[in-house]
Image 1 (tube, helix red, strand yellow):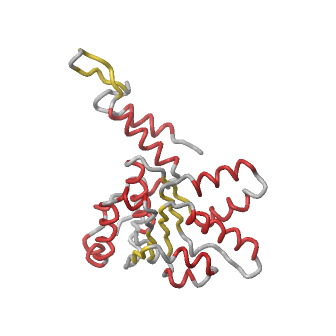
Image 2 (cartoon, rainbow, N blue to C red):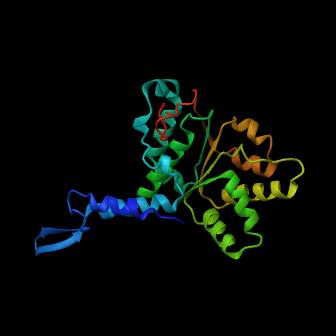
Image 3 (tube, rainbow, N blue to C red):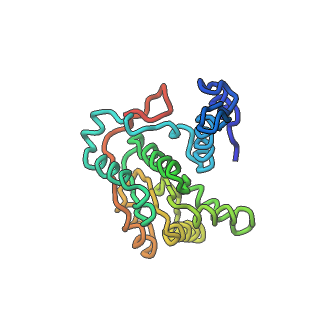
Length: 242
């Protein structure tokens, strides 16, 4: 995993409180002492986000960036998202998951990653992975012990696991073995008890038609969050804007 150390150092060096020292001299009942500056906590949070493999464009997204027109069009879905966030720890511990569906650019990945970041801040374990990467890792794990360990950690040690673009995996009829690996990975993710956050451009009902019954039955338990609209990506900014 590559960690952007320059970015992390920049947070510390530009801190208005410690001016890059990383510590502050504070007054306590027992006298003065040095404590970690608040910027150190921010750095720890950023490292957790990086380790969760949350893509850079989604690391700063906030629900307040959703514009009024988008919120009006998706009022029910936004309410459901806020309700989920309102009892996030309880829902994740219960393995309650969501399936975000909408056309390209309707903030699916942004919102999914926002939920992951809130889970990380609450001290939970979270991870983001695209479906095609998950399938590749499942294949690599057959012949590489280290890849197997990495995959097992993702599938069985996370409190919340996001699997994006589940409809973009190429499941051609002449790749039965590849298909089975992907389906097994989805089934394992569900059986781990982690709260699943899925993302797809196609409607879940259409996606599930491609899956065998044992996977379809499991994923039907996820609450569907439809996101309506056209692409809101600003060509001048890689972060999502309605």
